[in-house]
Image (tube, rainbow, N blue to C red; front, side, top):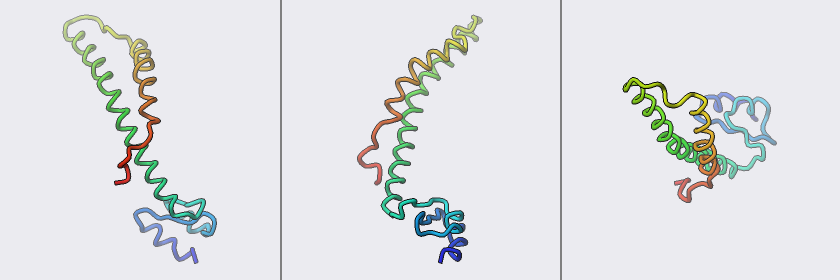
Length: 117
């Protein structure tokens, strides 16, 4: 009936409610609401979530060496007694020109073929 389902949905790891036929109490208690009442939507949502997570990992692994190199350059310059070779504004411009623009390709990449395994 929907009202009695609310405690079970709260206790579940992931509570799922139907959006069209579900009651308001059930929708509020659920973690996820299927707006089209189609269980295939769950698989699509999991696939999309895994794609986003995978692309986020790729983007971070792409950006990290650039930022580590910039930090290492600054640390070496400071240890050598020199002035800071890269100003904060220069670092921002370098990150916008290289990291941000080039990582867009990774961020919007299609999912891997075996992403649901």
